[in-house]
Amino acid sequence: NRGQNQRWVDEMASTMVAGLFINTGNPIKFDIDGHLVDGQHRLLAIIKANVTIDQDVRVGLPRNAQYHMDNGLKRSNAQAFAMEGEKNTSALSAALRLMVLNDRLGTSVTSAQGTVNITEAMAYLAAHPRMRDSALAAPTIARGSGVSAAVVAACHYAFGRQDAAKNEQFWYAFTTGANLCEGSPVLALREYMKHNKLGAGGSALLKRVALVNKAWVAFKNGKEIKSLRIAESDMTFTL
Picture 1 (cartoon, rainbow, N blue to C red):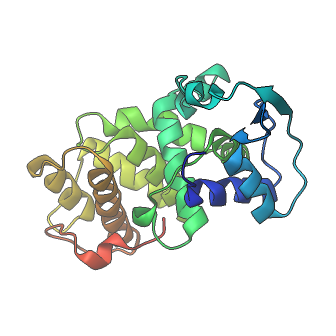
Picture 2 (cartoon, helix red, strand yellow):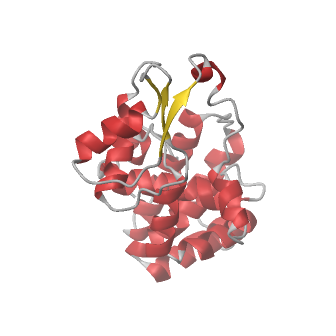
């Protein structure tokens, strides 16, 4: 068997404990010599979770069967949501990942270097259905702003949990730029995104979340920001 991925074991175990693990029909597989050739992470997760999980078992596979496994193209969460009839699934699935990791870690979305499987994402969406509204609003807000639709969707939902009225005011001001005076956190955010290229990738995405969150906290609390800067301490927060 390939080396063990403890993070994957931990994530599956958490899903099992929560009662969200799904039997997809992919069996635990053994070759003709009785050696386990597929399913080691599931079995380790079952041991860690200490729960009973229904799994199919296949025995008697050829000795070289393992070399031909896991070669298929994995379906993304966005594709799975599209199959369920959801809209704007790229922003929705990416925003759900941010929020699941944010709520799971309980410390900082910026330290969330982990995966969120489709079962977890769908369960979160079922428990937080207004995420759909945030995902639908996100492309219009994000267009030309330098902030991705995924970041907008996650922050729009998270801020709305804190203060729904101010959340709408914040995003209206960010989108339109109307009546913004010097010292406005929203103006500072718009100016930062206009004059700074953050690039792509995980670190850039998380810095965008930190920037938007810093502007939001100041806006919500009625504080002025003339120039937006990100310190190391700003990269640790909970949405």
